[in-house]
Image 1 (cartoon, rainbow over the protein chains, first blue to last red):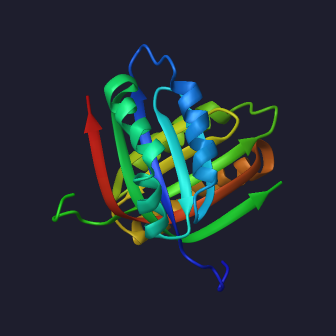
Image 2 (spheres, rainbow over the protein chains, first blue to last red; image 1 turned 60 degrees about the vertical axis):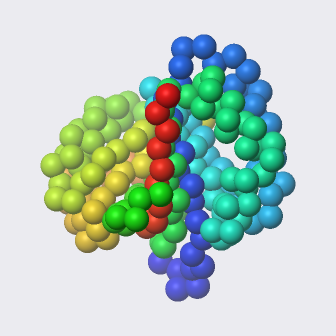
Length: 103
Length: 103
């Protein structure tokens, strides 16, 4: 464990989608591109099978707040609720510890 | 936002695997079954494409600590490092806020 570890934040976004998700992949790619340009952005991981999980990492709660209200992102969130997502859950988390393995 | 929200914990496990992952699916299923029997277990979400993401949810840091050192789980972790994972990262997080959408 690293004594110098500096806490940061994670947004865990889990979702299930409707059957027709036309336009979703393009929008997801655009949002990832946009997130990367936001102040305080640290990284993102994504995978989807029955459930989709996207975890984005941020320096602070303010960075998350600013990203949530970014105008193009707001439009994407609305479109997501109207057209693509059956269900989603957003968890705002403080990353308190971290460790890694490399083979 | 729910004023009565009670913080809990999430373990974000991200990983990439080696090419041959014989025996992995059975072990993953067994570990999920076992996790569900642990005190303080709240839930689990999993998805894998290029990267695998498993997020498990727990009532407390102690519950996470106990699960980490559960004997059958320890053997699985060792096997994972030896045979299946190229890389993995574990983040211990405190879930501070949460919201949900249902269409």
